[in-house]
Image (cartoon, rainbow, N blue to C red; front, side, top):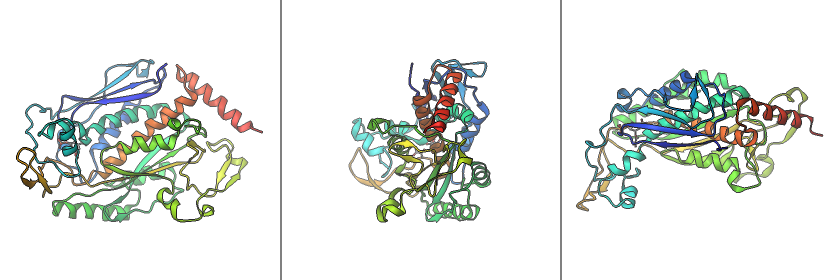
Length: 384
Ligand code: EPS
């Protein structure tokens, strides 16, 4: 039986984007409304550019589904590009510092950066969002929820308390255009993006995803490849423009005593039937993962996104054809895509959690997955 996996294909101005998902059990009811809602959120957020006015991303499921439920076969999703013009699009010979332009042109032995940028473009993230949003339907029956939001844009930082519920985070996040649950910081973030636009510049930021309701034991300490922290870091680090990823206290662990880092353990019988099985913590600096395995606490993962490499005012570069110094090329782009990146990260994380979930509880049908989950949770509660 296939492990849960996905692949994407498609160029920014190609015919379509494709996500191919393998390894989903049969019987998972799809929530098309939610998939399309996530695609719409990815297209939005203050600071986006002109492309999003052209496209209306809607998931077209080509295979793997009958009457709204998975049937255990490979599932293909298509997102049609309205702006399909890859053959007509002009050459780009003056690479943008920070983009894949120069590295890709040297790799594929071409002076036309378009051959690289078409695939490197963050438009590919639409396919990743579709795949992640789709597998959330597998996680939902087990009470697992992923919530992504923005915690910083440029110099403006949000304050988001650790104990906020998923419902509260989602409603606060969805109430503003920069997808942050801190409305005051949101105003400052919008002002910072406006200023960057005036300055013909771009802005990055920090995004965070919290995963609620994960049972203990996803991932493994037995093989390095299976460690869930490493896998989440790879998945999140592979999102376009991400330059740093941290779990829980992250880089903050380096400068203080162990007693200020590690999360002390209590037992509360009232929480025996929740994901933590009653083993509560006084803090969550580990971000829900110890030894590469979930420990029943909320997973907290953060990523730093660099500012978009396409600046209206350009940056100093070199013409690949003549080697003469010139300003970098300008392609239509965004001033700030940090809100969109929070949607991408939420769904990318959801896919990794679903993959780890099926590694532990997998079966051919959702009914078998449920039985395995219930068996494990019951055994863990009785553990003596
Ligand atoms: C994007 C689509 C792209 C860019 C952006 C993200 O569309 P176009 O190039 O036609 O404007 O707006 O891509 C980049 C930031 C990049 O560096 O390539 C999208 O759908 O997210």
